Image (tube, rainbow, N blue to C red; front, side):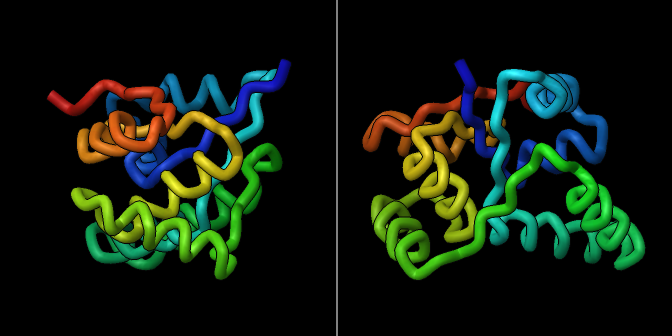
Length: 137
């Protein structure tokens, strides 16, 4: 049986920067029985974080790495997904970008992969399934 996961910005950054949780994300990506998705909005968030912190070259290298990962499905921001993210944003406690990962997870009946404690509220209120990554010490 195939297991579905959605990576949020936290998970992507953990993997890229070899932070706690990187191995768990890598294992999901390389596992034969997983489907991995990411919202294009979360990709954009990681791109701008990298561009701001370490430069555009690193951001473009990240973009190339993602585009060359055949198992990773990039989900566009359709109007329906935008409305779903907005509805989650109205619950409070999350950035709008984070709401796209949560909305995609709910839509796909997938588990969101993150270490961001702000998702706890959605886990409790809307039944978001979360795989919690270890946090930086």
